[in-house]
Length: 357
Image (tube, rainbow, N blue to C red):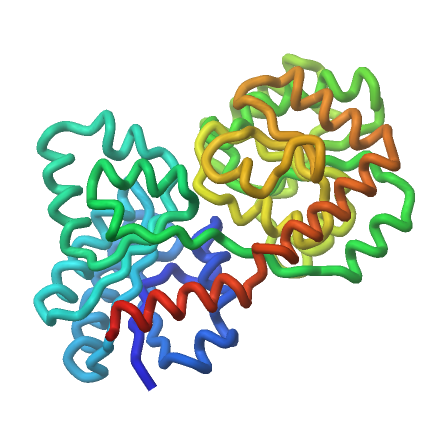
């Protein structure tokens, strides 16, 4: 059995990368390949993060020397994640082991387009050492061609896991008027727009509840709560914090609409998760989102920052039971047709075999 060393985050890390990798654990991928996980990051203070990174470099060196993997699959992002992955890429290249760099980053312009000449040179050098880059959408593949040739980039979209029993229970119960957000509470995710959207929705649906499950910097969380008070909408917005496991399942089951007003995205796992539960979606149209949120079919896809259109979409889905149920069913069908975990793993395995051979 061929060996693949996968550079990952700790399973309990908040965010999409950990969510993607957690789906691999116990899956067909582990039956077809010997996956050796090396954790390079965990949530915590600077010292904890630094210690985790340093420890992971030693563990990776040990894997290279004694396990002798046939392939290295690195999950990376932009910002600090890019720099943390450089030692893995260089070490693997010294051993002439094929490298797949699975890029989950969202803000390409900040990372590369607006970068200094020195940083651009470094990015091109590091990415150039990789045999294959995985992009989350065709749009992101186009961005990455500014760094490496298109022939080195393959699109592997994220996946969803179906929860049809929960879907059936939702469409047979009354509407809770609950709008769910899952993710980082910050400006990039459009969270500064949520209080105004909530205010507009509450004018038509007074008992609406916007449930913002996630966490952000102290500054961001404070700003969002201040905006909620300014708009006099605090009673309609809840902040349960980051949820996972049974708590996350409960929130997804109780919600009626999923909302993600991001300004930058790749292929957000949060939307795909929600679609697997049969939730209608209201979102911005950035990154790969239009591939999974079909405007007027399984929800509404609006321009980033267009709070009026977003509010209108949410109001329609909450007040029109027929449209809400149709959109919910369409979310399930979109997942079934092209975003299953099995299809994702099948494509990933074909890339593995191509690079190993």
